[in-house]
Length: 81
Image (cartoon, rainbow, N blue to C red):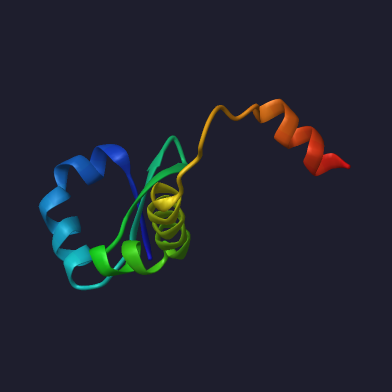
């Protein structure tokens, strides 16, 4: 993993994209503080297991049918008992 200052990253963007495409990660810093990561697409998707779970939850929630009105406060209070 290489660290590079933002101003240098702007000048070398094409090279950094080539590095990411080759599987290498680059951290971009501003004033010595990490502000962004340039990573290969596969690595970005692979590290996002939570995104897959969230997608499943959203798809499941769309299959649920609620009849009538739901009082959220009552549901929360019931869950606390």
